[in-house]
Image (cartoon, rainbow, N blue to C red; front, side, top):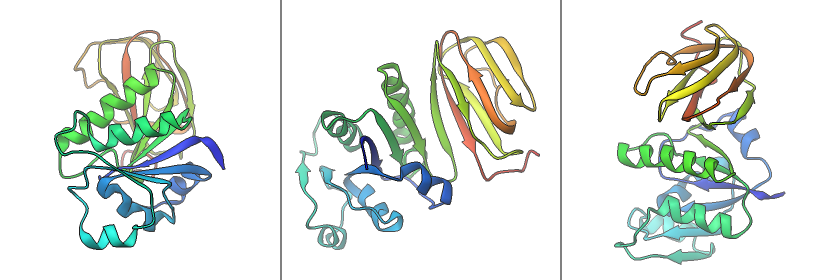
Length: 217
């Protein structure tokens, strides 16, 4: 087990894939409220379950009755997901895999996960957000990243600020030291030619990959 790698179970959509299972292998697990429902699908046993439990029904509570719980009031000042991440950091997390972070019934929660992931990356944590079908990786000014993707799979880079010095290599539409204005769609729907290389001099971004989507090939 990697004691500094934590999988955080959140409440959004999740599909089990071989790539997802490889990503979380050996990590410790903390569940946020209804995110614990993903534990059975993934064959995981959380060491902690946190939240106000307003999204947890009686059957789910009974199924996981032996898991340690930290209960918070409904009028708390943070989301259940943010609390779960804080608990992981208190337990020594350096790598955070946010499961069920990219979609769900509420777009505000999904967007908050994006922003939280970028903030965590700025603080020096390794962060991956995933639904199984999609993966998101924060990219912060000064970062260099190599990411293994299947040849022909789709990915996009979303700027959460203006970007300076963005470079993409081993992709269908390469960039070198590119300046991206805030809000531009220029970096949406690129195609991996295999393992891709990225670097960014200034700004904040997310790379969102669809490893099993070859519709752009």
